[in-house]
Length: 207
Image 1: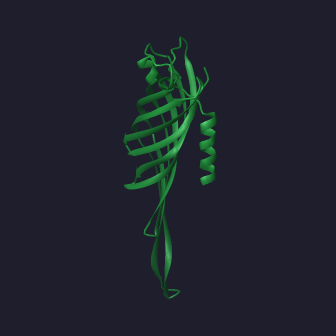
Image 2: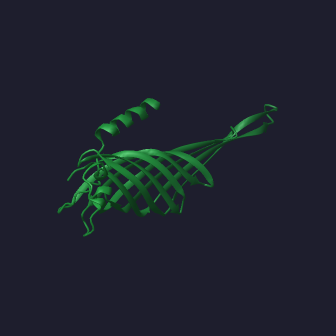
Image 3: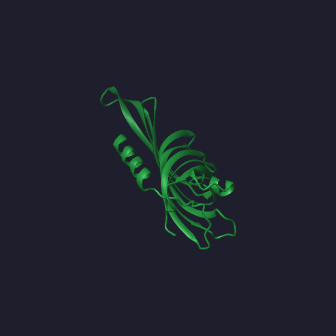
């Protein structure tokens, strides 16, 4: 797992791209970005840590506001929790959604053409529809009259539900070129189910 994370970090540093170019464009822009990190979802009153992957596709310059765009995403999460050694709780959350995103480089406000033009804070808001699946295994001691002793029996529960959440995101990207950048971000979701996450990743601008 550590090797996988290290390889990902190297790939992000070398080949990630930016969706948030600060230079003004007269045409529509399209980009893709991907993030992975840590998320915490409150599933069935259990605070469960998740491995978080979020691919995103976005479009910019649809509105007469420089830096404003729209993103579609699918947030994919896998997590588990062991309670007192006899209660194993597992959950998966798939959250497709859409958000408006505003991103402008610091240099575009200050007129700086140096490093500040490459630093691009961003913020977004929208909605998502989390599909939550969970399962639990509870080990309970049960007396078996046939064997005349106490044995451990595993009881399994599971359920799937669909929620509706407000989605917010705050982050900062560093643009290596007009096409490539890396980013770090914090996301917060609330409504039908609560979640917060920290992610790292990168993006590639197509046009």
